[in-house]
Image 1 (cartoon, one colour):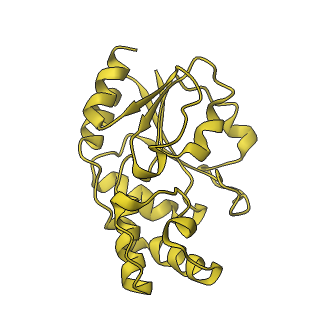
Image 2: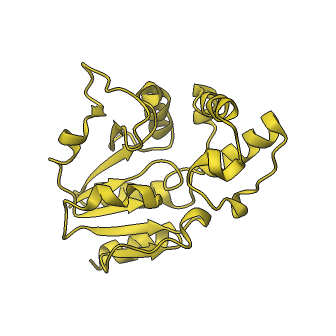
Length: 200
């Protein structure tokens, strides 16, 4: 199988970290459990300047390297790889965050997963001459059987794959989201993801 896995809030606890950063930088206290928007600017009620500062801080290498693993993620991904599956991390992180992101994966025992940066949210220009930055047209040539994703705004990236099984990692900002079809399944942890993929 070819498996797509999102990075933030699927492999690691990014939103929890950003909640702490927003409190530290702006004294804005929005706990993870009350984050109702995937968009961090909306989640924390930030102006444009604050939002830019938050993103810069949150993508500093030492900050990225400090993100906690989502419990069970590494074990399940390695189990899939050991069974011969191809696992690709398709992240919407900025292209400039590739190196610390790759380092995080390596440090957490995921040296055998591929990592690609895809401008999912239209925030930057394509980085030329790299083997990790994907243009949308190149992404759409890739085929996946299973995906793990938490962001409702990313669901559209599976429209070209009618048979894909999408595991929607349950998070506060997607609780009210309408899942696009019967091939989308809400999952509450990596054990439930593992079981559903095994039985798919």
